[in-house]
Length: 246
Ligand code: COA
Ligand code: AMP
Image 1 (cartoon, rainbow, N blue to C red):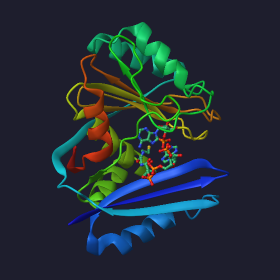
Image 2: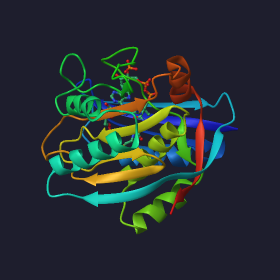
Image 3: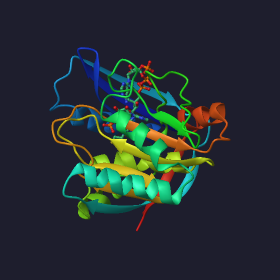
């Protein structure tokens, strides 16, 4: 039987980091230890570890999205590149994509802070999150053999962050009616972002200016998507990924 392990830490009630793994019971102590070591160098005043038995068998995906990387002189060039891809490859207009993506750089929550999850936008430009402060969070996803995948990706010059975000984006794009995901971190010193679209995880460097503590995700979806089914898939259906593409 498989278990989900979720760790989150915060400082002054502000979320700092989160991580999730899906492992068999005998691996729990080792994986918890590794997750705790990861947060060792961070300043925090609260940490929560949650271990839950999965209530259903995970869906197995053979391959992750295919990773590509593009570098730009500045983040504006990268945003324009992403907007161009979205407007040419999907039914989302340039204007709708631009308006919602720009919100992430200002703080997309109605109070001007970062949202605690992703914004959901359909082809008509309608916002579909049930709570615009919170958004939706994708959970219950991992690689079957995370150590092997991490080693493979680090050898190719990617980071652990890539492993986490690649898993999350792969789960997202697997849902029928999910068109694309645009992401910038809320860490002020992490400027690489990505666009996940059409089977690809496209890393864009840099996608935000250094020193900006704003970030977030936009999930672009079809207008006829069933929002309750999307929430259920993202929050409750476990996904395990076998390998990376390429
Ligand atoms: N951002 C901001 N706040 C968060 C958060 C996040 N990612 N995850 C949890 N919180 C805070 C919120 O205040 C939340 O309350 P809310 O549900 O009203 O928003 C509260 O913690 C409890 O959240 P919960 O969903 O119960 O947390 P959890 O213990 O199930 O853990 C995480 C969820 C942290 C594992 C998950 O959100 C996460 O971050 N997974 C890893 C994602 C990842 O790999 N990202 C790629 C990195 S590039
Ligand atoms: P991160 O990639 O962890 O730097 O998170 C960047 C932004 O993505 C956060 O500010 C949230 O708005 C959003 N986010 C964080 N975790 C999740 C998640 N599990 N699912 C969807 N959106 C998330």
